[in-house]
Length: 104
Image (cartoon, rainbow, N blue to C red):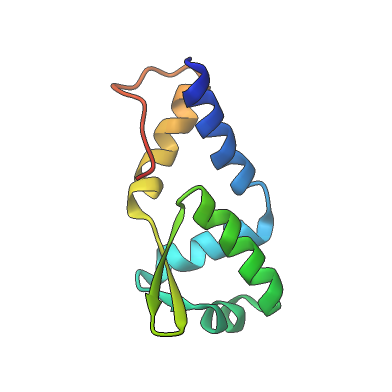
C-alpha cells in the first residue's frame, strides 16, 4: 500500500474513532438532508460545542460537507465517502479492490 493512501485511510479511521462522531455520521446518513448544528444537538443529546468540535473533525476528512446559508451552516453526509469507506477497510485488510478510493 502506498504511503499517501495509508495516511488518508488513517485519517478516516481516526475521524471515526469516537462514538459521538459515529453517531453524527449515522444521523446525517440516515436523515439524507442537511441539518443545522442545533438540529444535530437536539437529535444527539450532545452539547453544542461538542457537536461543533466533532463536525469540524468530520469535515476535515470530508465525511460531512458544510453548506452555508446566510449566517447558518448546514451539514450533510458526503455520500462519496460513505460509499468508499468499506473499500478502504478492504484495502487495509489486504482484500483486493479495483482502485484506491478517494473521498471527494
